[in-house]
Length: 379
Ligand code: CAA
Image (cartoon, rainbow, N blue to C red; front, side, top):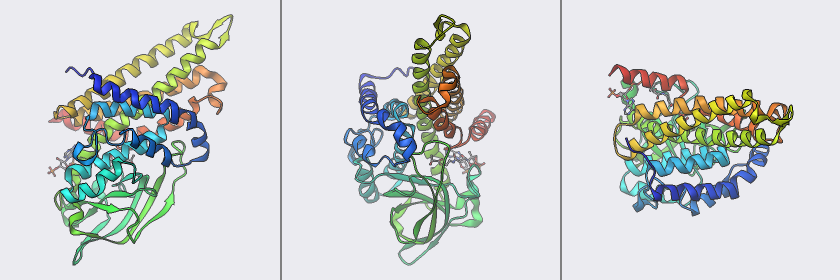
């Protein structure tokens, strides 16, 4: 499979790299301390077209596809991981509505997400008792005279408190299990939709994570995505793509941490020479560089398969598993190379280690990726 990026895809990467270095990197440490949501940054990214990279042109996107998207997200992850996850989830929501919404619903929401008029999109799938085993969700959708009424609780919802629009999964036919799940478009601020709690997390402080309550949320019949009862497969397909996004984010975080470690190892001297010349340090950095290269290639290969409209669920699960597990190890090495300085806030690697930890959990834990991979091996 030839997945060498094209000139156009590399140009998107360069645009993302430039804004990440100019706007995100300089503010990342302060955002980590303040927990400020990156509203202004999302609007700046939108101006450069970075919120609609893989969205159809007819809906305001650039229609550049998953490879350009992955390359850009790697750069944003290197700049500020909290911004990258906000972008990633917004992109998932925009792609879902673009593909499965009615033409009118897609026109109503997608261009506003892409242009940054609405910041951000939220993916309302997980519930307090249904994360990995998401078929166990309990949010109910009941038919009304004009559409549907939603009641339930959603957990771990990235940007849930800022979302201009959400996709929410609910049971339309509880007796049918996962075949009774339907996806709905829910405008932010719909009466009955409230934020019950904002999580205080180990890392990714600039990305908000909300528990949401839906109490009699009324929406129209046209706000169903895809088929009634077809929501589970739709979530799975969205997550297949989302996992490329998280693998890309992890690659970006790890790249930033490794670069910091190399800089430090060249600068810091012990026993009369830069520590990078000590074999113990050089070996750690060599492993980290090798893992990073493999993670990057696997992530781009999954993106390329998606771009070519080939099956990519297995490649995406493998890329997410490998990239996030190794990004964690790379960030740990980067911290170790810094010694005590790695453990304090003056250097960026302790933040990278805290931020990257989430990538092994959200959009399917590493254990779920292994389950997906193993099931595909049985086919
Ligand atoms: N694409 C299309 N359809 C799929 C699919 C895929 N990738 N995977 C499964 N399906 C279909 C199956 O074909 C099956 O269809 P039929 O009933 O017609 O045969 C149906 O879905 C059920 O499949 P399974 O029997 O495999 O379902 P399961 O209940 O055993 O669960 C699972 C499968 C893979 C474990 C799934 O529950 C899963 O992915 N769990 C993890 C959920 C997750 O990633 N959550 C992340 C939350 S979002 C988030 O984190 C975003 C954020 O804010 C950062």
